[in-house]
Structure formats: C-alpha cells, structure tokens
Length: 366
Image 1: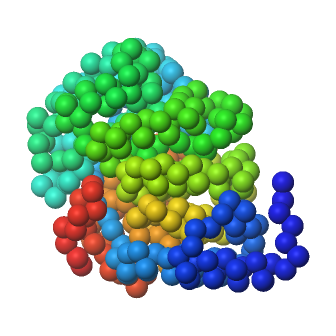
Image 2: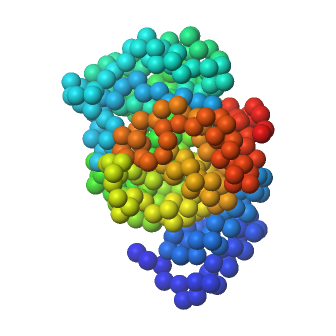
Image 3: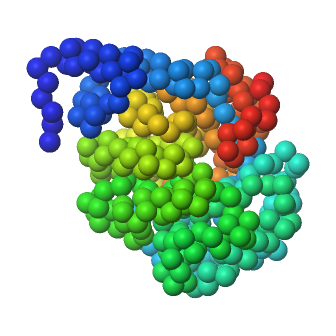
C-alpha cells in the first residue's frame, strides 16, 4: 500500500503547518514522512517539537545492565542472546552470583539496575521475585527497572496469576518500573513471521495499561529494520500514542534498529543511518504525547547518536557498563560509556547534558 501524492511539497507544507500549530499527525502523515526522502525537513520538524517539549536538555542516567538468565522458551528470529536449558553458554544466576558481578562494577553514583533476560520456564515465578527482593535488600538506593511487558505475560502463564497480581508481587518485592522491550513490532503479521514466541500485540499493550493503572511509569520500544512495513511502524507508534492518551504512563519511546548476527556483518546487513535518523524524527512527530525519544547509542553508535539529538531525541540512555543483547547480535558500539563520555557526547552535539534518575528527575546539569 503506497499513498500517492500529486504534490509532495504541498503535502510536506501541510504537515509542517500541523506541527507548527501543535496538531496531531495522522497515520497517513506518518506513512508520507517515511516515503519522503526529505530527511532534513523531517528532522527540522522533529527538532522543533523536541525543543518545544524539552528545550536543549538531553538526559542520561548512571545505570548498569544486568542479565539473570539467557534461557528462553521463545525463539524470536532476531535474537542471538537466548539459549536453551543445558545448551553451551546457557546460564541462570543466583542473587549471590549477580552480587559478585555488581560489586566489581558498582559505585555510589549508580542509580538504576536495568534488568532484562530470557523467559526461563525451568524456574518458578518465585525465582524472579526473590532475585528482585535480594537486589533491593542489598542495594536499597538503586531503582530496579526490570522485565518487559512480554515477561509479565510469561510470568502470568508461569504462575497462574493475573497481570495485576504479577505486577503487584514484583512491586512488593522492590520493582519500580518495567523496561520497554518485548514490543518488537506491534503487528500480528510481523510477530508470526518472525516467530515472536511471546506476548501478542494486545497482551503487550494490556500489560502496559495494567502497570500504568497501578501507578507505574514505564518505557516502550520498537525494533525496526527487518521485515516490517512502513505502515506497521507507524501503526506501532499510534498504538503507543493511544495508550498514552488514556494512561499517561509512558516516559520514553525507544526506537531500536535490529542488529545483524555478527560484528563482521557488512553494511548491507545493517539498517541505514538515513533510516535511523528518519525513524527517530518520525517517532518524535507521531508519538506527540510521550515526553522523550531515546537515541540508544548501543544500537546507533555514538556519532549518529549525536546527530539524532537534532532530529528529535532528548535522551541517550546511560552508562550501562556491559551491554550483552545487542552485542550478541553484532552491535559495533562500545558496551558502555562513562559519565564523562556521555557528557562529552551531548555537549559535542550543542546540547545540555542532564543527569537524571529513572523517572527523569534532574540530578545534575552539566
């Protein structure tokens, strides 16, 4: 399906007028922007919107990525992180083993543990609860951001509890917010073709609604650059926008490019930088009610992340320490950055670096 426009310049001018007056863009507008090659105009419009929302502030956090288990019942076509139980390289860590890793890298500036992992059906839901509880007891001042909406759906099946009961149990154990993953592309055609053996579109969105109803503020991602159509990308953004209209529970939208299977993969196996910047910009224009768009340096690389800051992005994620999921799939970026490097990265783009906590409260402006 392609939208035929007799005069693209006029159409772009109409969209620019909507943006100027703060009017919401339609599905057709989003598809038109994706089909346009006028990257600079799209970027300028996104920059206008972002400056209106966030000024020149660009946010980052001192955080650490943790992975309790890479054993997973799902076999998503794009994932190179997962293992089967008993397979070479498979692991499921006890809290004590996790403490050993954290204590090597921990310093008092760390504000957040960012926890993702496999859907491991060889352990009970109590394993996940106890892991969160143990972390919170040992590091009471660190915010725990853990589990995707897809993992919540998995925990619901594993435990026989409702989404609300699962989330409440995790909150009681010390969880503060969900990570944004598991969304991939919110399209059943895509999810079937890519073998996304986890939550459906409706289930993913429903978990977010339940979480927001419990007072949680959460994150949302989109994994683009494989077999999805441009229409599916735009629809994904509109689904998030609709939930946000109802709940106001999302803090940030994170569009991530799919990574090839190997670091040595050539340029033809990677998402074009042009597409990356266009997707950041269109995200800012379409998802007009979520405060921040994240330029995730792990997937974009550091220099493209700098450019993304004038294409609508207002967040560069965090220090991470040692990222594994994208790197298992051939990401070329560093596995983490120091606070000084993040400050330099943001200043180099002519923006103001702001260290934040998980909920975008300002800690320090550099």
